[in-house]
Length: 67
Image (cartoon, rainbow, N blue to C red):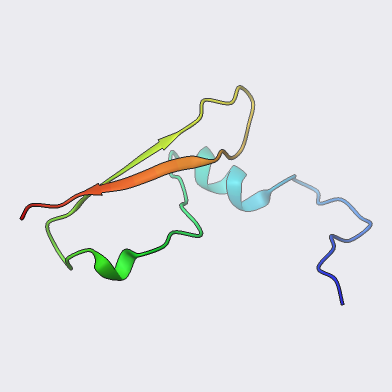
């Protein structure tokens, strides 16, 4: 099988993006190695591209951890 989108559009394109961004929130998905971070004390930094009119972006995400 294939994972293809439907042949119909959504009333609001990317409704989750619009809901989160419309409330000054953002979402991070498909992050790896989070199990290697301590349960507390890490500072996570997300640096997305500034895409004018975009509802999402590839993002460089990294964490600062004290030793």
